[in-house]
Image (cartoon, rainbow, N blue to C red):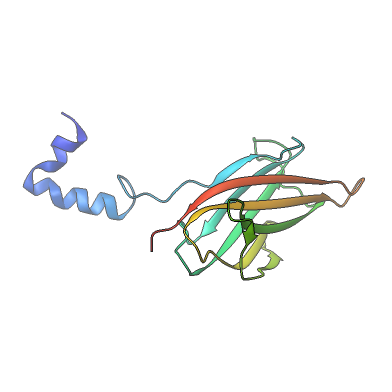
Length: 147
């Protein structure tokens, strides 16, 4: 018996509603996004709050920079600049986010806002503060949003 058939009977529809509401089936939050920088030196993990981003509403981005995809060493020897642009339209946001470091050591950008629907690009500029001062970049495409 499939989960659909098990939950389609009348008594189990209530269970399906409850499971959906707590994220066990359907409508779960999108996963955090992650990947290596273009240059390969850092592993970037980020998430938005709220997730998914709501059209024309302010949101925050929290990002951690790690040595590798194992995510066992959060680096504190980097500065992270967070921005967002629409490459297809060759413009950025109308807002300038503020940045801080949270108690976990992650960088948080607050006050981002997507004012157009379409493909936005989250941009992370990661500068080594303990070595040669080089900057690596990571870009992630995200779709915005339903009006």
